[in-house]
Image (cartoon, rainbow, N blue to C red; front, side):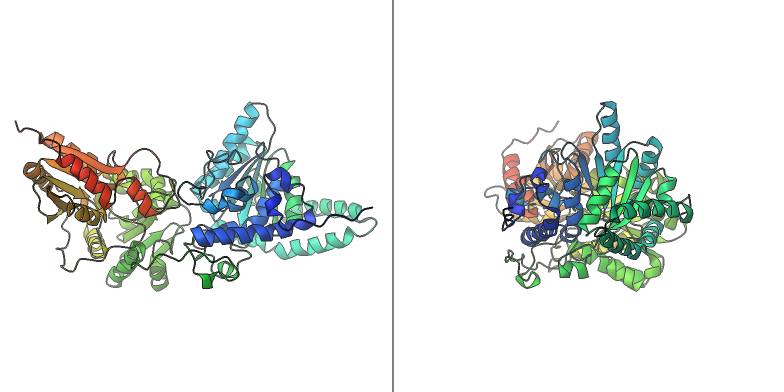
Length: 639
């Protein structure tokens, strides 16, 4: 026989889709995993992204595409940021350098990007619900393909995932659920379910022993028969030793595992077996978040989402772009420090987060006051009602939650916080445009939906000083409040100290006669810069500080003086600051021209925050153009 051809220098470069992956001998798949990791590290350390999660899922994704027939078989990733290897194996390798860049690949699965992405996923705990829907649609159409949900990074701690598991067991549809158990979300997983999974993982030593025995038996003459016998014996013993009320089985799911999530042979065998079962089955695999990259393995929280890393942080990797210069502390860190300072003198103050203690700047609070800090896991609805219960019990809870995730708790905000008028303070992090994570993570709706809620105070600090002062004010109120701020560095407080915020009162910053720019949050500084460049026109600028209660006296006075109002907000124009000001003018019958700068209902794709703001006209140049256009229009005549 002629000698076999040596494998190509790069296996990854031979793969244009999963059909090419299946041509690679199993013995070479571990080398492919190394190449995938190297490519992920190379691109993510240059572009930023979710590094540790994607590194941990490499073997699992290889095994899935090796066993299944995508895109006919449908794979949904929860929460989506673990899917970089999936992108590389499904025809997007040549564009992978554009990951998370303007006009490039999304950092999450996106149906508009590839037929291999059957569902858009950017928020957690949704995959099982979506997969169950796809499975039901498959059955109604008389098809028989596999629908698989890959649940990772703590998404099983989310209530929606548990609801979907319960329904899946009841419907008994053919459904493959893979639990990628790395014991991490962004912060370490918490809760009884996480502890239950940890108990299951204690069997991992047994699994490794079983694999060694199996490997030895396959070399013997009667090995295959012995393996089949031992498998049947194992299933029988499991039935005796495992209580019938065990969690997954009691929900009506067939449970397989736990398996080593980095052993490709084991994964391929387990997934092949599971894919042939005609019922809902959960395959439990145990992975290491950050696998193959020592810094990420040592610090999976820190390397969950990264920006451009310095060369010394990425040895033997192509040199990444230099990081942006340090622009001072970000809003999240400042919020965490301000809350810690307030809590020093008031034992009623508590902190709540939903798996984001590091991301929201609360890690020092958790370290200093562990008995007054609550991480509820990926369960924003529960976080809000927990805060309501704490407030009803006499505490002063502060719930720090990303804006886009807070949307999940709207009913709880209304029913459990606003209606009973409880003193719950929301630290609404990542408000506005967030940058490279794109449309699923923008916080562009919070001003609109928070403004709807009765009894709520809604405020937005322009800089570091206002952030601390507004938190103090929020904690002094007798009802609910929301303090919203963007991702990124906070502008420093001006050299001349501004007066502390008073409830519902804005602050006039600049006089002008042709129009007034009304701004919220750090956009105030962009408005001031724009006002300096209007040539023959002069613009007044006001920092409204509060959306609710709105400073109507300031608004109406500005309308009377200049006759032209331009609102600036990093929120949807519908229902936000623009809506509030326009409604005030209409209700009072005040004649004035009004234009608004904000977010339209067209999703803003991934790009750097600076580019996104420029594209939406929310930078100084965009505000200048809008102000000039408004200033040239004739004022309305007074009746």
